Length: 176
Image 1 (cartoon, helix red, strand yellow):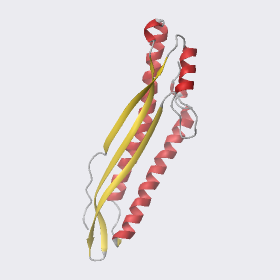
Image 2 (cartoon, rainbow, N blue to C red):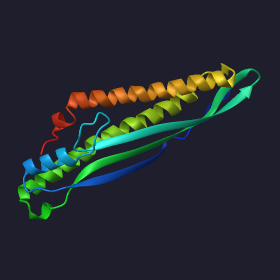
Image 3 (cartoon, one colour):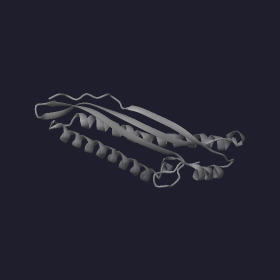
Image 4 (spheres, rainbow, N blue to C red):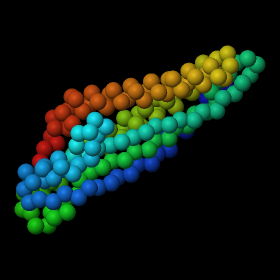
């Protein structure tokens, strides 16, 4: 049996984009984020949002009537969208300090969402590489792709649970 090889990490492309907001009070900034923030998949607006996608490729090796995976690689792409306060220079020092803390925590929260994609990619690489040989490459490919999709679904469920448990970061101190 051949041992599968895989890169230590996924190839990844993370983009961070910003949408402008303005205001001179926390109430105005919150309203601006609620009005202009990115839309989630459910149509609701969020102050920050992360979209990610994981894909994978593998090479198989056939020996006799047995097929095994000999290498696996994964690709992760993501976009984090965050607010950018455009008129902060005219605001009070207190509000600027609160904004700095808020925007740092929001960025960390969104990076946590991206981490779910990286975790999915790691699980896919490891678990596909560990799959036992099958009778024929089509059967192995079907099982490998089903496993990959299931591992992504598992991370999506963990991501939803994280937002539910933290109230989208609010329980972790994400307040302006």
